[in-house]
Length: 362
Image (cartoon, rainbow, N blue to C red; front, top):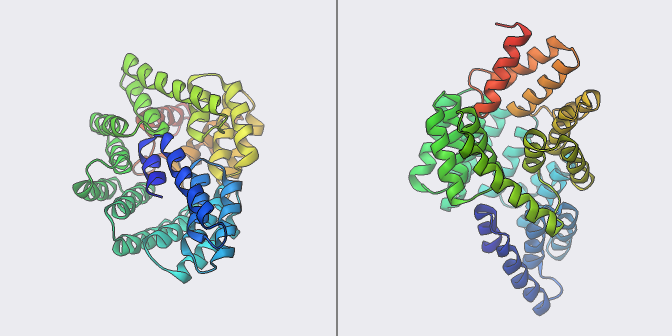
């Protein structure tokens, strides 16, 4: 389990194989009633984005031990990514009934965040922070609290939460990402770039590389942007060779910086096995960039159907509405995406402001 967590934070997929070897050995020694190893296999499958397999293993773990809260946690994660949101909520409730610790409270927070209830999500995440017993749990809670503050348009609070977390875990990539986004919302683009650079130095995860590359692009640093995009393409080549499904960052990168037609194909592949709201958004953007705006609007609406307050998704739908001539709807989405303090990276924020100006809204 430690190897799985390490792989998530370092972007080293070789650690998954090490984790699987240990889990398989455990299951060979105790083939039945081994809920801990079965939960581990579920977590491993989820980390590899095989959420159907994760759901199967989580159910096995619950059969072995109906009082295993970790199994309900992974089951909730799998249901969420498979678009089974009510089932996910029931699993989260069961997890909290069994053990209302930092992990279960964080998942409860995410249930409300997905539905746009950021006040309730923040309350639960603060409880998760209070219940946290490890540095990693505290770091995760501070990163989430920073993101929630930014969704509510409070960039100074977002910066404060990230800074608080970084004082204890200064090399946490998620906290560096959170602080970068807070800096960007405050117009401190150079500081945002520095934090994203440090985060990618620690863990070259796709969403961090994309944010750094697009920030360099916004600053006019063509060669530096190209370097990040080259690394992203190399990662996608490895993913394709391994036969792994594309993630949303790979789809968005391909749509904006590669072939929109290929991005559409990638999104369709991802959506077949992961009908999650974030994948609907990525599919919407790929379709829009490929000129298929009406199909794109349907996907963008599905991405936002739960009420999620995600600035990038609102910007994406705004651009689609604009392409379809729906200027009032585009304006409403742009204003929501920019808000008092935009959670968009500098490149997307600039594009959103330019679009709003082009529509003619002050």
